[in-house]
Length: 497
View 1 (tube, rainbow, N blue to C red):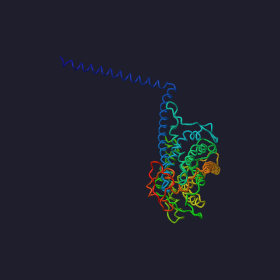
View 2: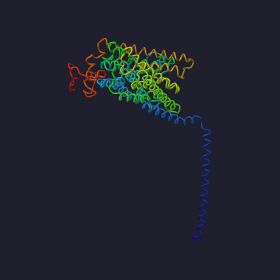
View 3: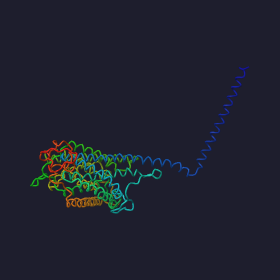
View 4: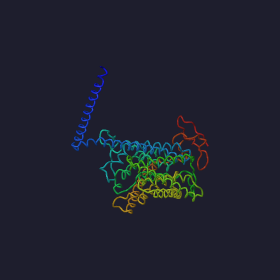
């Protein structure tokens, strides 16, 4: 009997399963129909609410990408301080190495603090100062909130990026005044430049001031950063006068070679790498295909100009001096970088090559011209940053494609030239007042005795190298520390000549 019931039981179970399955299919179809009907009759506001989290997520992604990339670029620009230090130390006498390193450290440290309290507010005063020559947005940096509408990037990273630029402008001057300026006077200069002079002229362009309203273009600072530092350095070099032994009684320049060309060359490579943060980082927003493409294009133009400057300077130096000069080629690469900085976002590849090549020629001719004028610039800082910064500003008008609407090519060139002139005159005149004021009260230049001994021992009481290794670049004679000058407590006595 058990076997006879099994087929009927199995049949009943199968029928029950079929009935349940049919019921579920019918229920699912009804649910789908109901959902479709509900979606079709839902108000438009429901679709907007559904899309809102997507928009918020995109804003957060853009903010994150822009902030992190700008942070990397800010670090690269800060790293340029090492490059500036290496170039200046390598192209100067060994007896001044500590002094140069100390100046570069203080440019950065003093610059960051003054930019925090004064400079940042002067440079970015806000919309109320649009089209003006002066404004102040207050001290310190207001951090972003994370519970409201996000900006394109973090205000904190914006400060870091801009402070690095301010320090770079100040450090340019260090090369012009190397070997004979008192350390205290240099601190005064550095504070004035980073706290007042650079931020005010920077506001005219990057803070939405008068020159920006005119249509002046300076993408990453050929004029705003480099020309300002170069012309400030020129004012310092003129006020100080030449280093002892640099020119003969007849006015002929006497060679005073640097003590470490490998270090100088390494410094140029560091600066070249840092320039990718300087120029490409000035795009400021990187999220999205268009921004990413433009950022890498800027880096490519930067590379082309630097290479063109190095080759052009090498060839002209070779023709003039009958030998290929490493220092000319190194300065040529920096010259190309300075020249392209204003316009790397709006020129073609051939234009970038032309801009860099002309800058390379200008730096060699500028170094020769300074010698003719008996203006002592130990590292060629004014030809590189001042002269080629001016060229970068004007070249933007000649080669640039972003001509403001309603303006002709000649008008664009005129705006670029006039704006460049205004900024250069501002930097040179204001810093001349500072340097000559320090000179008038006897605080600018060290004594001849201290200069011959070297600023490391006379200003800081220490040497960068063992004393017996330190020789004067132009005489070959060991450096003697003045016997009358007391040695700082805890410092070993230095060896005489």
